[in-house]
Amino acid sequence: MEKHAITESFVVKSIVTYLVNKENGNWHEDNAKISNLHEHGPDIILRGGKRNGEHFIIECKGKSQAQSANSVNKEVWLTALGQLLQRITVKRYTISRKDGKTITSINRAYKYGLGLYWVTARVALRRIPREVAEVLSLYIFSVDDDGFVTQFTPKDFGKDHLEEEFHKTDD
Image 1 (cartoon, rainbow, N blue to C red):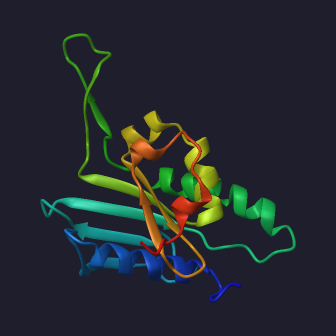
Image 2: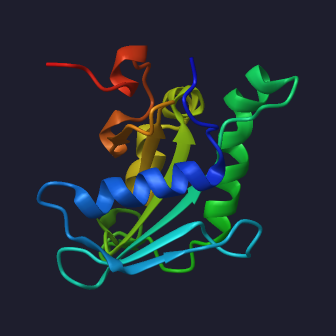
């Protein structure tokens, strides 16, 4: 049984709490900008990080309560990804001057994330290719019904994940 309505605000709060309290993390609440509901711009912008020049820009979506919630929850990540892509304003990579075709480095100072209900996150992880996630420095933050957050890095994209990977286990 669901303990909380998994609203966009719930997802945002869960992710900020997770990142600020993450062991060996470098994100600080005083360097966080959280947008109000229906405000223009990304839902979360964190500044700081390891080298104090890092930025984490995260677009979040809650769990749909609509009659067609099952299909909405599986596809809303597309909307979030589109919104996030519109916010990418920095050059993502450099190309070799020698051959003009080889990507030589990816700009990791700007990281991007999707904060999603776990059902949605599972679909997005399977459908977004790993190579795309690597170039964009794209992460997924999955939030379950209890507010437990699981972070997925670019290496986790482009493959199926078991449902158990999205929930807290009692070890």
